[in-house]
Length: 185
Image 1 (cartoon, rainbow, N blue to C red):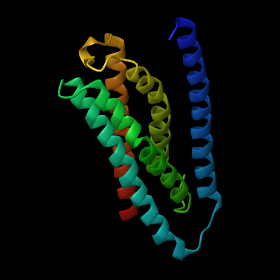
Image 2 (image 1 turned 30 degrees about the vertical axis):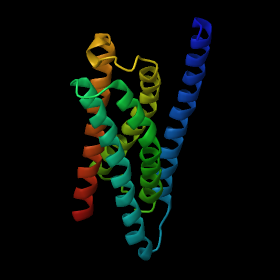
Image 3 (image 1 turned 90 degrees about the horizontal axis):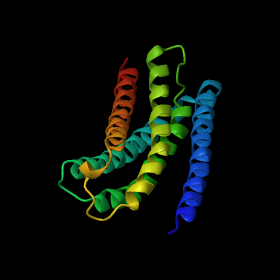
Image 4 (image 1 turned 180 degrees about the vertical axis):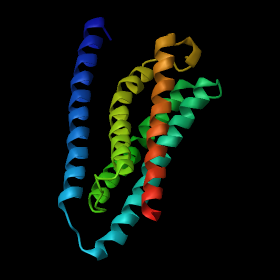
């Protein structure tokens, strides 16, 4: 691939990511807005909670597996190809889980007067935007030689990967714990 073709591909992927960011923000805002406006009948709560929990299991489980593969690569226990393959395999469950969380969350009547709920919703937005941002790096990882080591990457890129993984886990688990707290309080 020539330098011009590579630059064109990067520009195209940047435009796609921009659409992704806007789509995530719109879906999140729509979900929060519907959650405030809708007053579903009481019988909807249990099925919505079931879908919410199943979506959490699917989405978070897939994220943990991709990040586990990244950790194995960073510590020299696997290859960059395994990370890329895990991402390609698990990208659909990650985004399906997130979509299920947004759809079912709107039916669970989130209280925007609760600071914890606002923090949880902020975490969902952060982890979603982080997911879009990661598409840049997973594409770049796919271009590396199959045996490329994590430590051969520039420090800035390694720091970005580590920071992104930490942000992802903090956002997911904070949302989980707040959701658990809110459901029992």
